[in-house]
Length: 114
Length: 111
Image (cartoon, rainbow over all chains, first blue to last red; front, side, top):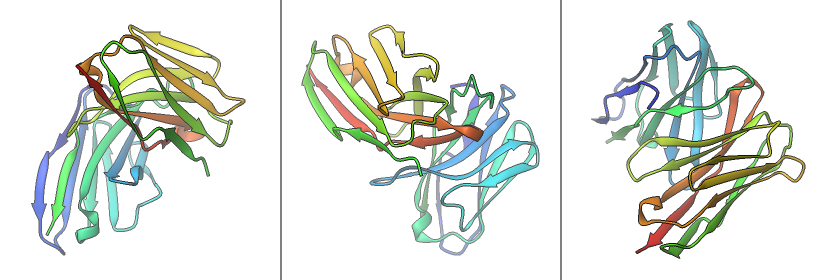
């Protein structure tokens, strides 16, 4: 599993509340990603990071923010949760070199917004 | 924008059969291609990574091929087993470590 831990694994929250999901890695991968997976849409990129304090938006970034203050941790925050953000969220990592782009995924966080 | 398609969306085969899963992509300017499997309620597990300079990779009963010019990759599974039942996803990797995922093929191997 490339030493990737996501927390929490399951969460139920109310509409309008802020929520933070955490991704922790132990193998010093440079790139970290947050995806959401929904039926009919597959995996969609929310945000990614290419180093400490270096982040960029993905295709579905509205309503989400991220932070990476340490190599090993990448946080995803839903600023004010909405029912459309009910989903399974996956963290992924890669080394970032053009030759070795193999991605490894965490086990996912199932988030329900009620 | 890179589009990645996997056909069929679902496949059911008897145990022991050899099978091929397909992945097609619209833009041949890719670095690499990676195949994953996903079990229900689980994360993605990396199966094979094919670098753009390679034409195929093998791991056990799995063989993946890549034809950049035609925008196609195939995952061949030999002698299928019930434990192979899962969803299989392909992802193409472009510059900046950008991943583009297909929506997957759900495989059921019937004992």
